[in-house]
Length: 446
Image 1: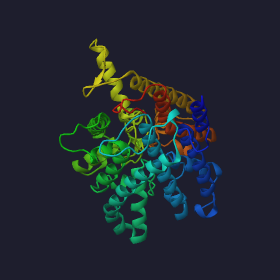
Image 2 (image 1 turned 135 degrees about the horizontal axis):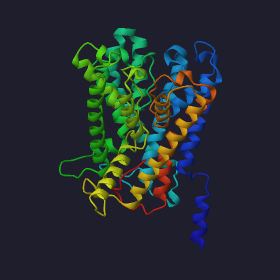
Image 3 (image 1 turned 180 degrees about the vertical axis):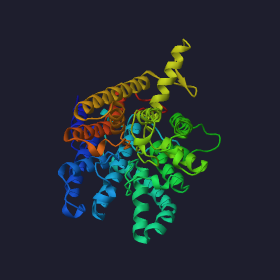
Image 4 (image 1 turned 180 degrees about the horizontal axis):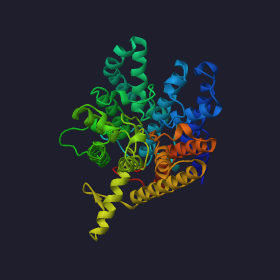
């Protein structure tokens, strides 16, 4: 009886916080603080409406990248610094929460000691948060620092030392956190054939997208040791989706005079196809005019935005592992087998429930968002569905509707960005918490 009383008392301790509550509350506080800072007269080049400041802060914290006004033309250096900080804190906060959820449910990272101890009630102690956040921040700053050098070699000759280094830093942070914010009004269209931009930027957002668990698993890998199932699925899925997307975009856009056909040679077209195929997962940069893409290509991008990135990364969407779990389960049903497997790994009921929960909620969210935008905005269905998927997947690609949004439309998009950022991990955490999570190599969904 005494032990039970002590446990209940510990559970009510103010120093133990529910991870879903921590994530949601933290993002809301960041959005409010960011809005107040961006509304300061010295943060913008001209007076900024409260709605625009709120939209920019929400987009930055949720690392989406949708903007109602071009970032570089709207904000002063101070405003750009605020956006950079919001992107970094928002992206790394999400990654920290993802790692905490993974470890608190019994997971382990190959090649690393456990960063967090399992606790009753799936609660998180501040020491666990700090320890995990330190490891995540160290990884992020290392990768962003490495990328700073080649990006500076591109932008310093164009803009001078101060502005060139600032551009390199801003885009490095934006890319790793899958935010998609740029200081150029046309995103990366001016660099469609630049090999440095088209390798460094994707390397950053793919690294941030696959997440801390996958990167740590790769760094800790030794010959003869089995790769973790999460590492295998995310890497294989990322490779397949990236290559398939690149081929499809090239084939669908090669004759489009407004996109690929405007580029001078085959190499430039391949670079542009590569970046445009990888950025929907969920970085939001573009080197092609999104509004000028064919309907077929737009549908391909909607699918890629819906899938998103890795479960423990800075991206959103239903996640790569979710897609492959559902495909494996479907293939098992077609073959009339009883137990679905992926890379010879049995997919348990908990993982299937997570995958189904996240996917169904995403479909409902996109449908509701598309319906709401169809009512509030004067735009065709493809454009509305594209914008809704981009917002819920926190991607940041736009067919031109976001800058023209009504007040209600802005409210709908902001709500979808917030929901798309916090809900997949919250659902995965809650479903996983309801089951025995003692299996150490469980596939991570959401």
